[in-house]
Figure (cartoon, rainbow, N blue to C red):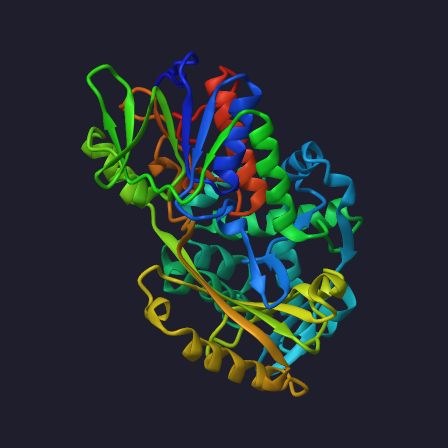
Length: 451
């Protein structure tokens, strides 16, 4: 199969989707001298990385962190003049299991972890070390993650640690997920520790992604990119002269020779009637996980762990992310910012629950977890709902990937489903955008190749 993408450089490009992926594609295209328009349905740019208000505090809608090993996003931040401002912090990790909260921030605490015996701990540590050394990730796509972890870690480790963690992120879909999923997760975190001299060093830009996106939007404008917010594109029509017309319902928006769609794969399947049935099926076959994520502004801290992993399957959220254990509290008006994510199937009924019911469930759970917590500590509570967040790395996933190229000349699809050897995060998103640009510029790598 030819891996070259055919484009028309003389005509302007449209990038549909103003998240970090679309913004980075627009930025890279503009850097190569192309004229670009960026379309975003929301009134703001940034997508999953966008910011919002909690009272007087402006911070990220979802939790984000930069690792020392995240060289792609660090390079982009350097372009924005922000990389040197990253505040690097050594964080701690908690574990909530059997109704108890434990610190798991170093080797000694791991050895003291009561729920596992010494044999379990040795096997668990060996599993993590082995996974960090695996290079041929593609063979793991043929092995179910449950089978792989049972074999390496043993039955008790799997049932006590791995299974609750898999369910917290994947629900029952873990049964169809390959071992490549857990490998990618371990590899990223292990790389961060290796780069940080065995310390769990995480970083953030003062001001959060609100500041990053403000600088990024200004850079795009300076580069000549035309930004169109509050402009939904739900259809691409091929004209007789080969131009691609963008439509919003019955409204004609503009015409381009080259269009890049960054919507999630299932949504992208219906954007153009001229796609063939095989292309549509490949896009629709990608399964996604969604998220319901609550942001809480609290008067008092909870436990000073950046991440608390939860193995109790009865809890209504799947982790506690105490952002104020990483970010200076002065960014939050002296208060504490906490995220409570719940990863679910896109059709889960929790998406239809009112904020008040979600708040009651989540606050009750916090009262159970933390004896010092009081619901009177809650200053602000907001809920974000996103049905398509990250694709499930099912068995033989890479063999079924949608191509970046399409049968429609000038129409391209770039989305998170094409991240095949990593987990969804901003660094991987920037890498994906860079790979697309390298491909259309004739460099090594391919959008059309299913790697």
